Image 1 (cartoon, rainbow, N blue to C red):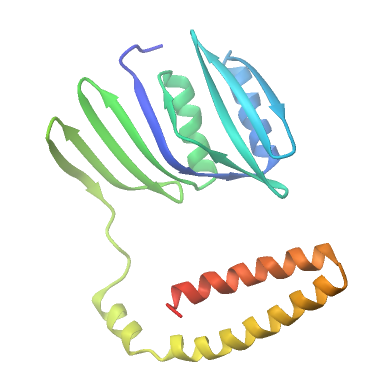
Image 2: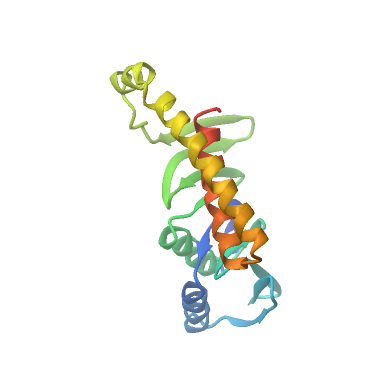
Length: 198
């Protein structure tokens, strides 16, 4: 273990299926880590021994998938490599702070790809890399001139009314699967309404 190596993972937004967690456990065992795991109805916990430290990765259950929760400080180089492989494989989001020789390098990762790299040294910081936006000025002008959002807003309201009536019917019939599906569709419609600023 490199004593000067320290990586902090914040705002992790990684979603997994059970197979990916099992692959992580397999990789950790192959790398020689001592670990154990436990599972409850709401979460899956993997505890990894790194020297004298114990790192506990918490995966929150979301139906038949999992989401990693919490912020983690990792002082083991090999373990941090495995976590970064996980971020990349799941195309997740994270803020990664690498602390080395009184200098911090902060990586902002979206969909498994670095979009911004900042170096902080004392009070000074400099942007090493920033991914260029894909949107051009012409595309922005076309978007502002487009009537598509207003047209979609009208249809969206009808879809919302219909989905609410479907939810009401499902609740009356006590069909839990239909209630769950309807709630998911309503959440998607809500998200789209927020994007359209309705």
